[in-house]
Image: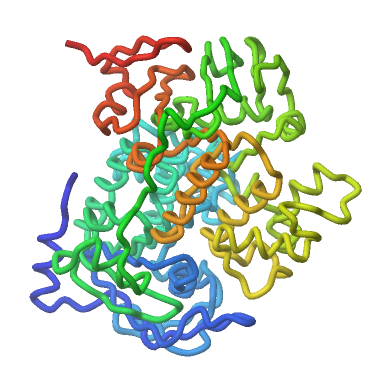
Length: 529
């Protein structure tokens, strides 16, 4: 990985001025003090990480810097001058760009259209498409990705990683001096993360200030020169990365020692009967899928972006069903053609895209939690679950189970932080009393303490006999949580690995550099001699 740290540190050491400062920033929302008297400096050529638990104030601070929010108190100083923004476009024109976790792109427009949206070159009052494509290609070449992305490609045809590159190209087109990246690697595979981090190093070397929000401390320590820690809306400290350890940062984030990341693995002796079996399942993308999931076990699914991980989850849940092959639930042949079919069979699906598929953003938190229960009980009235009568008790109980934090359950879901939105999706499915859970990126965008809580919750489900299929782009998560690991490649299961396998073994199988012999009865992976 390219490392821009020495250049940035020497530049700061000789007294370079910050490109941007936030001083004594305070921001309140109804019932919430989001930020209180926060001051941070950002230097040119520096990668500056901002970390903290969900709800610590990270996103609020970034939105103030990017002009989406106006602070109640405090100042923004850009290149030594006090500035204020009433709209994100004002900040962008001043050289401050932000890339949100959910991208701000128009999927049915081309790459070039998205880069120059609202600033399209015109000739005699008519859009000059050729000139727009030429400029877009120059920007993509500047980033070194012109062979990967065409300016005329529709954004909807691009992978998540490629869409992120389009967002970066848009930022460069504004000649940005500050680039804010909110969880930029949350949905990327390890190969794509490497590509992005190399690009961040290149942008830093060009004297751009990179503000990097991430819950992945490994990446924070690989990339960042300095780290700012927020807790409950207040500044804990800003430190040089070389002066601290990950354990120290976690302690500053959560206010206590944090001694484990993953719960103990299950034991094969505790696994029960096969609850879900797929034989030769195929559709337009997936080919010859054979798998079994037993009571009480976590089967992890790994693979590169586009390998078929999410497609597998969608097929099992009936969103994009298998067209051939057989499905057995508890040994009985069945068909899963639609999500209601899966829900009736007590299969729950925690989707990767919480914003588009997991929640109703403008509906209250309470209604979101009860979505699945209401779908199972159309004449919803009086719920009985584990002896807890009524939704008034069920909602707070489920929220507490996933540590969902909100001042009121009547608040719209869109106002929750990204991590709390993910917890909201989890709580919705816990209410369904499912026997089989499919988790697609269950801890995406969730802080380190909440992530451990969700890991414990998932393992707790298996102790109650629940079968879990867990998809994750974070290899440490797959390796730390899985009792078995399926590795996807090109729409097929390329191999199965046992618990406690290594990252290298997973990547060899995922990239096709290891030969895999797969069958539902006898599965093994052998590396090429």
